[in-house]
Image 1: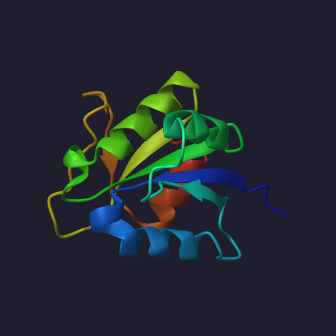
Image 2: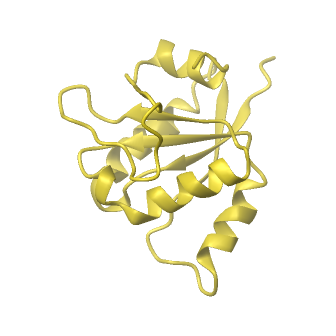
Length: 130
């Protein structure tokens, strides 16, 4: 039995909701190394939403940042990546579209590579191959 890593998926809700659903669907595969635990929220949570995201990240093992065509403009994704880095959570950037120019969140480091989204790549990335 595979011990699945609990994943937080950070994504641009306004532009990439469909691809996030595809990623969540892959978590249900029998050989998936991860399970969907939490993700970005459209409506800001009442009170200090960043603090609530910090608490949600306490319950995950890894953060997957889906990079779409407008991710560089998504302030929520940038904030979530900053929170993940601050908590020392392992994370990686995953291109949401194979045929489009995908952008990184503003809080990504220049050394952060955006990896091609394939099933084999995803399994390797979750296993720490970065």
